[in-house]
Length: 250
Image (cartoon, rainbow, N blue to C red; front, side, top):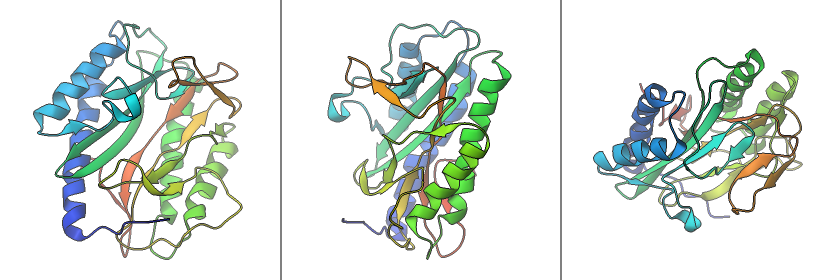
């Protein structure tokens, strides 16, 4: 395992990539409404990322056709933008990445489309809060597994389940770097966190079972039971004190 410790100068470059995504989140909040297509949201995201002098990290990554991943309702991750129109009561997870100055930023949010069911709103809220439960352990001297353990405990306490097949990751010059960051308790304690590590921490939470299947397109992962899923991710720097989140507005 090769974990790249970032210098302060490199972290500043990653902050530029991260803030583009934080501002994109604000734009998407306004644009997500009944009748918009996921392809239109993809175009909005790509245009904004490029307008900032950055490149969408996901465009062409491993052959992925979109600039962002647009996962609706029971789609957990890697939904491909299409002509699908969003409907009242839908939820949509958008996973977004930007590459600028030689470094990547990575973030994901789940948004409500119009009025949604209370249970769907709870799913979105619990998924977001589970990230913040986890990063209480994103500190120098903690073990990596403490993050996932805290996420899983909070999610299951609220009656939902954590996806096992996809995990978070290190990030920097490459979109995916070591180490893998599970959102659940693993057998091993994992590496000891050190100042300068940068992690993309991203709980993916299902309303029902954590089991999933990948559709014939080879990308889109959906819940096996057809129930809703949510996703929340930020790019996080391990410091000597509290973790620094690069993909939230200050």
